[in-house]
Image (cartoon, rainbow, N blue to C red):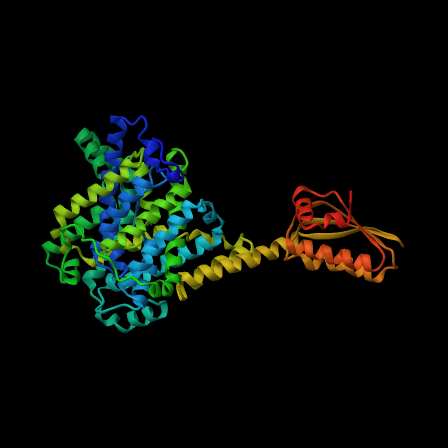
Length: 556
């Protein structure tokens, strides 16, 4: 299918994926979409509630954004929707700016993401250092854990503040309202989520140990029925098992704990209505910081997720620019239906790949599955305990964090340690906006310092009428001070000195480096000498030719 010329940069992966599409691939995509749609339901509700929104905001974001990202994106198997990384950001924006301004900031972030992709700037996201990504990811995971303590303990707190220390003070002040039943239910959920996948890994392997021997003995007695039941149970997502079983347990025993129904009144069965938030340019100017934060975090998360999907699926590599455009469209549209920011989600994408997805059709089936479940079973959601959802989010936070990176800091460079720990602490203590700004600035400063240390000026010979130097590395604004020893030689030597610079190991030259060479040339000419440059590489030669400096000196 050929697009019009003005839409040439817009090439959804779905178009190429449908070429040669057949029944076998459809059934694989339908099965994986059904699986991931079931997985997405509790996560979407939990992310929305933890962000300070109603559960339907997360559900319809997963449906609408999930469908748009799959239909328009640049990855074959990525699943889009609300993500845990946005919990802290959304809660902070709600606390500071209100719901209407959150919707406006999300829509503006969508426009920014689309423009990044349209102008082919998707690869710039890869320039964000790994140390910053690990730092803010771990910081967000810690904040998610802290935000879930209230519901896990069943504390009677009307509203939690957004900042770290205030949350700790509020939790400490209300610890006497702890509900042991809520705590027990939340811990049972968390323990079950850790045990569930390991339980069936053990059951399907022929390993030593009492459990494996017992399973083989029962299999011998029960035959193929048990094997089929084991396979079916192993395919049930842990969050769904926890949600259904513990909700039924709480409902049947009429446990006195807070549920979705007691806090929110339930989930509407009707489709969300289209509504325009109050919009003004004055408001947009006030929302520049949250808009950039949502856009940057969404871009980083979605492209990291797409790269993971490429590695584990073996399908053609994703198009980062098309993916950003799809993320932009999704984030622009969902606020008009009361949704929240969306991005690529690693857990659901990995589930999609492992379930056998081959194309974006699986993502469309996932969105359709969610919509059907919500429209058919929304009244049952009123019984879901919030402690169970907090247990699910604690499990998400644990899997989200790169905790091993803390243990590896001893082997890392001092620059890596400083950037990672600085970004981590700033995310936890202040917010992600400050952490990203300071982290990127710190990374740039340390990079300049590192690059300047690699530039070297070595004196190779000197006589009464000539001096030779060799330059290594890149002569840029951070390294110009290293030319000072050559100036000192010029000023202290007799008049008529010839300075020879061997620059065959000089890889690059910026305007600041060019300016310091011009100043050196002027100082030499004033004392009746000459500057000779030897072994120019392509980039330094081009810079000198453009400025006219090359015509003023001798070059060999």
